Length: 122
Image 1 (cartoon, helix red, strand yellow):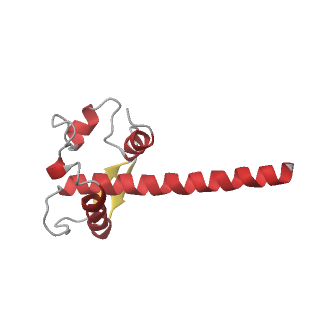
Image 2 (cartoon, helix red, strand yellow; image 1 turned 60 degrees about the vertical axis):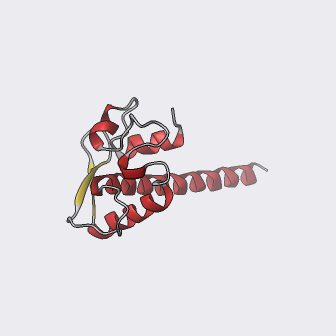
């Protein structure tokens, strides 16, 4: 039984790790989409690679033009219903610009901050 229990714990950790990775990618994609703006036009990027802040210690990651386009498509498909034009439909005083997200409590202007918020909204 201990072996089965240990194996079950390893599977749970693997599943949790996979979801965490997926959320981090999605959060980065959402931040990329925010940088591109969330216009209702076709999903295309007129810019090159963009540095996205990962944490509050200054770590960044670069998203390619293709990743930004994919992120914008994901944002338009999954988030734009409530976040029309870079705003928040449920609270019109909350926008999605990096400046606004950095002023939120807790801050959501990094991939880590956004993932934490998505996992446990306040």
